[in-house]
Image 1 (cartoon, each protein chain N blue to C red):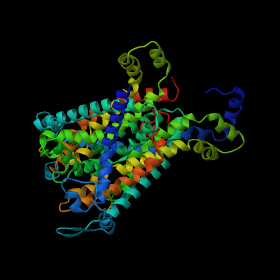
Image 2 (image 1 turned 45 degrees about the horizontal axis):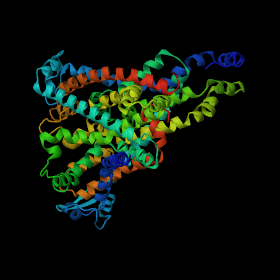
Image 3 (image 1 turned 90 degrees about the vertical axis):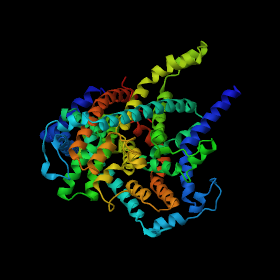
Image 4 (image 1 turned 60 degrees about the vertical axis):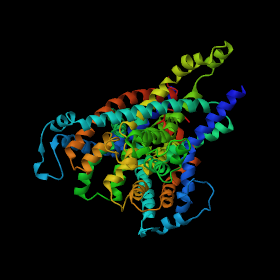
Length: 312
Length: 281
């Protein structure tokens, strides 16, 4: 922001001259505590990297030792690890894909303001405010085989004895549903704000010219909404690939290893099999994925943030 | 046209049902006796009872295998303490830093802002495993202090990035004008900068409180029952056998009410924070 030259020329030297050292050190002083917090996080991160290169099992403390990439090699040779990869990918693709579709659909429904849509967009915030772990337990109550209301509903539809999270065939479906319940509102809120921020002229022009609705949707609205869809999708992807709360509080990764995604598998390795080295190696693989994804996300997000702040 | 209207109405109803029914039903269950819960077919008409809540508040659960004591109120207290102190600490650490990032261009600032952001997206267990070892050896395991410290992983990036955006919107000229009147930097910061960024600070505080409250994995790993919040407490409760389901429902309602009430009354602050500032509310 440019100021009238006089004010800034006369103001700055006066301000700076009083404490020449303090003036230059100020930003560092102000951010010092946050910097320490940063370093505080870097230390355990470095330790995790070290653990992942060690043979480190709490049950056999005497065998602890540095083994280079031994944990990684044994991981990549192990079918359970590839199962973990597949489970995580499936969960991520299903949740993000379905939530984007549903979220966009709901955002379109709520686009036009009315009493109903205003009330509904406030109500939609509620699931988002529920802790994912608690949401999972709520759905566990509703899908209980003996008294669950949802079990009752599907039995009305003629499906008796539907086992929800306790059968391998439907476990993934159940946790994806809980994830959708919690997080679709997030996508809706973001896309709805995006929709309401779009310029009106293209839509009015299209209406005047009698352009068909599908054309307006695919060629005008979607391209303009794309930055929002990308940001929302990437953000959710980052969360889904490392999902723990919902899966762990629903089935602890079971039945069998149907729902053993990265973090649940790592937790199991660390706290059931006390194999810290292996758990750390799994988490390092996951970290690498999230690191790449988060860089893409941050780039998109900063562009969107810049635009929302009137920069572009 | 009427067909289109009807379709829209049906779609809105389905959406409303999908997202609100679970909340509605669990609240209803929390007022049911076990007999009402187990009734087939289930019915929304029953004589409501406060029995479940009374049992939870008193901490004595009467089950068919005898009386069990569960200190769920302690979990609620822990959640409150952990979330409140995490937010306060984050504001103390984060607001000055956010101001520095917004006002002064310095290399370290950008690096730090992004490092903290990237840890927001890193798998929490990765840091929690080594932290568990550290905490156990220096005696921070199972303490409020240790948990509040680790909760900064969630709350600090939120405060930094949301508040930073607000400081960037405050014109530097106002600050300089105030300083020309002879006020110190500190007084300018407290009397001009902070009040102007207040909506952002409020939004950041609210959102970090809610995220801290909803956290599950940190306390699952770094604390035992003495300091664990409602999320972990409820999990222990659900997995414990021979517990009445009405009491489970009541426990879940207890744990979600604070954030739901908070969110309902402050929802206009939340939209912007939820999008990490990508949308100006």
